[in-house]
Image: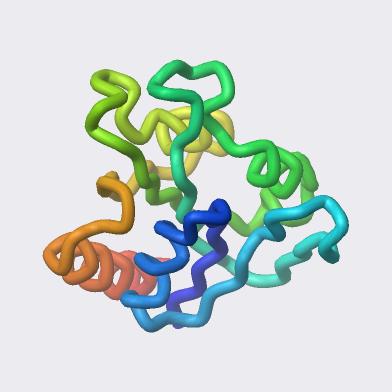
Length: 133
């Protein structure tokens, strides 16, 4: 069964995309006062890219904190990233960084909250990916 862990800023663009997928999903807390998320099952991470297209600051601090927990990191199976094409070569670079550090595939990149086509492609890709786990 497909399981998503995601982070979404206050704009909720990433959350809107995740909601359209229709899978079980857990949100990495936005604020430090919220309870820390611990996962106990395999998941694909969906995250936005910050920082205007540079590697520095591209991965949201909340995602870094979540992945710095060895237990949480042990269950990641892939990453999907959102970004803004205005970032040029830095489009969705957060996914590239996370993929390199966790040794999991960067499965898909989409802009802002994604298009209906992005939702369809990701849903089909996740279904196929989960069958292979």
